[in-house]
Amino acid sequence: MRFLLTISLLLMLGSAGAESVRILVQSSPLAGSQYYAASEMWLAMKVGDALELIREPDNRHDRHAIRVEWRGHKLGYVPRAENRAVAAAMDQGDKLVARISRLTEHANPWRRVEFEVFAEL
Image 1 (cartoon, rainbow, N blue to C red):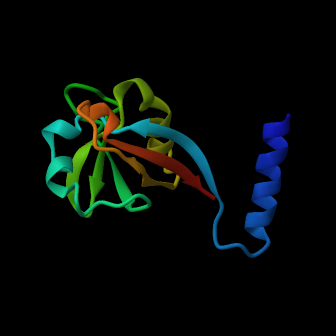
Image 2: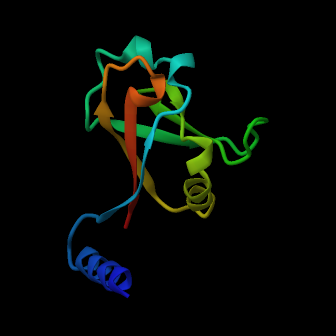
């Protein structure tokens, strides 16, 4: 019930003249960054930078695949274990935006880049 009240309030605020309202959908580590451009782009990337989410419904490894790009460079993917809801929202035409939320120099590539996905109302 509290969630519904919050959503209702945000929708009312959004219709009262605010440009847009963003609701956090998920926060995730970037999957596969060791195979793509994340290490090459590391020094240029900053927390808060916008990311592009690109749906790949024909991906032969995962029909819910969502590629993550930064300034036209493929960085990796939304993790398979966490991509179904985001894929469904994208398939429905929902407006989603993403940004880098954390950059950490770490030996484990799954801990280097974290990002957030927001629904924009």
